[in-house]
Every structure is written in structure tokens, then in C-alpha cells.
Length: 258
Image: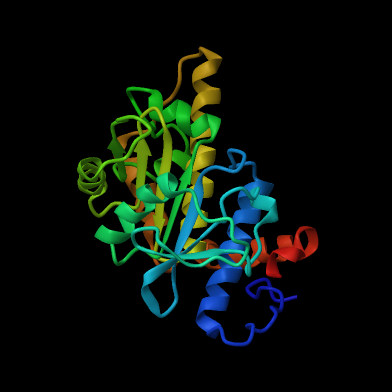
């Protein structure tokens, strides 16, 4: 078995471009992986992805499905304002949830995928005044590279959208104070890799702080060196992770490809 290759995939349905179908397969896979790794919050939170070849259209989960129920063909296509273009199951989307994603997609044409979570560890770290500390190798990956956005309530106004865009700037990771995480990626695979390590960093930080023992914090230059290694576009691990995740799903949740 070639460890760099994902398992075979079904052909695109009639009338759908191969680019959109590949995007649907990867996004459905990402939802299933979030379920597998317990990054979910019942039917809430979202992962959105720009449709290949359609700059102003995005794919997102149907409102009401658990993440382990999402399939490539059930994803809803919307425009940048969340207006539904195609909705195979007729479930619609959570419009309030998409506003966070639309804020990023409007401001960052370089971002293909946006992820938002409410995991226990990430909400806890986002609520700490210190935010994410460079205590572990997982966390050092994000040293000096995390944006923060203050919590303003469950409503989401145009003014807050602008503040969220300004706070994010050109960074790819943001902690939403008292709320959760926001991760951007130039591909679905890239965003998943970032989210996985961000979540692990948050889990480790909360475990370490709960120990009550004195902690060793590496020197800033060490954390910066680690972060720069993870940023390298030639990092081989990043290229191998996504095919491995697709092989995992081929064994455990192959119906995501339906």
C-alpha cells in the first residue's frame, strides 16, 4: 500500500463537476473525522468550504444532521450571505452559524475552508486570559500566530463581522473568547491538520494547568523555531496525514462518500 495515496473514490454524479464532487467528498470526510475525534457539539458548529471553480459558492452541513450522518451528496450549497443555492435534503442551514464563516470568506479569498468548534478544551483555553500558552510542541506550532476575538453575545451583527475580520487579519487561527475556535485553511486537508493540533494543544494545556505543579515553559526562540517548521510548505507529515485519514474512514465510515 502506498501510504501517500487515499483509497479509490466514486465518480462524480451526472451534472456535477469533478472539482465540486472532490470538494464534497473531502468536506464530508472532514465532518466524519470531527465525529471520530469528538470535536462536535451535537448538531451545531460548522465546517464550510469554497466550491471548486465557484468562488462565491460554499458547501456546509444540513441543519439538524449529526456529523456522522453527513454525506458528500447531502451537503448544502450556499452563497457568501448564506442564501441556499442547492439543498438536497431540504433541511436548510443554521444561518446564525454561517455568519462567522461568511465573515472570513468575504475578507479572505485565500481561505478555502473555515472550521468552528465548541470543544470543552478549546472553550476553556479561549476563556483563559493567557490564551494558548507555548507549553508543548503541539502548542508551540501556534506561537505568535493566534488571533483573539472578544465575545459579544450569540447575535452577530455587521459591525461584529467587521471586528472579527479585523481581529483575524491574515492569520489562520483565532480563539473566540468564551466561545471556541476558528481555523482557516487553504484546503480542507490543511484546515483539518491545523484544527487537530490546535485541539490537542488545548487539551494538553488544560491537563497541565489542572496538575497544579510548576510547569516548564520553553524559551520564545524555541517556540518560534517549532512554529516555523510546521509552517514549511514542504513538511512531509502534512502531505501524508490526509490520505491516512481517508483510509481510516474507508474502514470505519465509508458511507460518507454517498
